Image (cartoon, rainbow, N blue to C red):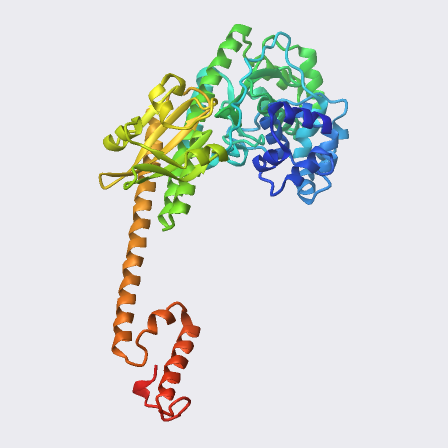
Length: 549
């Protein structure tokens, strides 16, 4: 496992520290212990590692070894304590299981032990089965959103989604199910066949079907490509990944069809294994629709379209919630540095940018000064700390107040002359920070590939920029108010000091202190001066109350 993980990580150009950060670990040593085989790995993290490194889970991890490591932890023991399924040896000699519902809308769960037990047994695809073109995820930039930690159920309206899936399943004559990155169902199973319902009447049948569901999910998440595979009953199932920016967050599963008529001997043998009525199961098997390979391939394309729609719905909801969360954070802050940092982090997460920079305008010098940057190398940041805007494309942007989208920087020489960029930066979106009709800075997002920015993306960044501009304006107003307040206090203090002959010229010096020490020091100095003038007042108990400090 060590050599495979190291080779896969190095081929992607990641360091152990970067991997630890993407996995949510606190230190590099936590990941290095996994890579060296000194620490166990959960199924969720195994899926995430395989997704990041663009490798199948079964290629990077030994199923039996991971199972042993998994069950040594308390969490692994709790999740793996599912009876016979928690022992991988109990699956020896058995073929992988099928995906089939017990009842419409039923939600089934599985344990990591079951998932890796199925991986140990492997799976077979039907003869002639074809996998779709591999969809490799984009190279992770300086900012990485841990999508596998985000549940689809947190961002999608499951009631509406279930209705859509139900109608689609009935119109196609398939069973549909959406799972998250761990293989757990997000929706109930739509349009199950009577054949699969009969199989799920048996505990062993349910267990086999659950294992197949998890196995199919792990398979598509590990390779990021759609495929169709067979189950122990001979039925064909289609698995299509649901991806966001090329990173899988779930899977769309469908099936309950056959590419060849079922054999009566096979059905009777299956009925004997599960303890079902052979005649009833055979009657139900005869009702399973038989599809041609052309129909199957056409359905895969439809599945991919549905998967893309679900991905877009998920991502749009995620973006909106990010904006709401960012607005709450910056609205509660009056520190410009904090506001700027949270703004660039939010844009970097939403657009997965190479760089994200917030600059504020120095009106006196007519320069844009960097206040926060995400992913910007130190050398570029040093060169571009203050950028003059006179006679540049940005000057027109500041005057007009309209966003500037550059699909390919190499083809826009006017923009390229304005800013310091490396050769790997290809696309840019610059949005003005405008408040009360006045432009106070810019918010820029840079991508590593040519990209035509959609109106939705421009609106998202513009909304964030407007919120940031208002927060910066509030911070400036608060800073000015504090300045006016301190100026007023100093003026009052100076007036009081000038009026008292004993403290004249002393109050500004004493104001350098604060709190109780300043008060005591000031009182001692005052009484000391009066004592020097012949008044025996220090420490006197009958010192007039009206004259005490």
